[in-house]
Image (cartoon, rainbow, N blue to C red; front, top):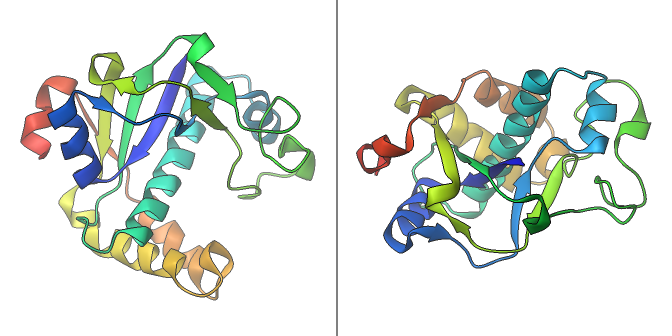
Length: 184
């Protein structure tokens, strides 16, 4: 199963040094039944892009909690065994609080936990297929979005939606795992 694991650059550096991301359990994002229902699409590429976007938003939340981290979102795309992934919902799908998140209808942001899964084991870097990182020119927008998430109301706070959208307008750049050292 392909999963998308949100990190920060310091988190990526620590993983590079240890050879894995851990300890478990780890929060990641994947194509789940709830994400499929929310999206209304059966196109796997589109669904994986949605899961990547959710992981990028989670990376923003990590940046909001770590003011010292460089203002660049980081997401690892990794292939893991299905047995190492468990949905993060009470109904066995995702979305938490007794629903898949897709029941809301429409394609709004909805539940922040939509597509969220838990990895039962640390993630060896050998399982990482690609690294997605913001370009340096996204730092200002990412900083503003992280600040909005850290502020009163978080993602629901005044002006947060526009600020988050500006950061999310910056596409994450794709890097091969061999380029990891150049990112650090």
